[in-house]
Image (tube, rainbow, N blue to C red; front, top):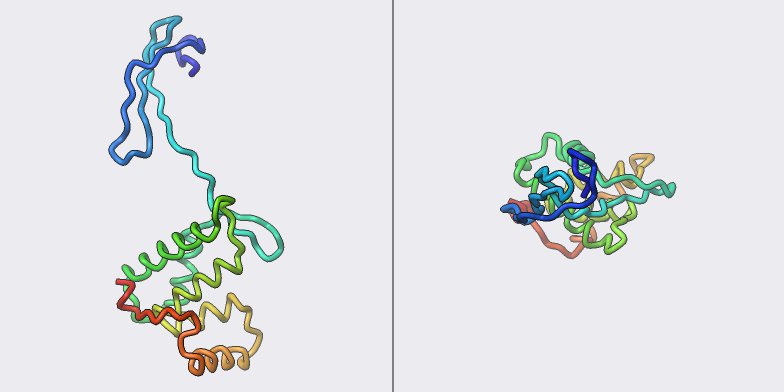
Length: 166
């Protein structure tokens, strides 16, 4: 570690302490050249989850973007903010699991996760989200999706009700 006072690369660690949450280590150091004491912090650098778009571009997974999309789908629906927050974290967790070690998930897979979760919370929000995600061009596509919902029952086999998210 380079000394901030003299620039020497030679130091010794005097004390190490883990923070309460266990996410970083604080180290007190002393420069061997000038005896200046300083603190360094060590943290795990996690590779960020990336979303692979349909055209092959990659962009960082954005919780705020996900929340905006869900809020739009759930606008004026009887779904609590607590349920929305639980839904967001559930989607994030499942996306992280499905991405595996390479920390990448296809936007199609992410959209499918969102649809599956929305289906268990609010069917109207599900159709709203599906209309954008599946790029419905006309009313017939809306009707077909609604018909599939009513005739197939639970397409995800989840059987969840919105109460399960609270």
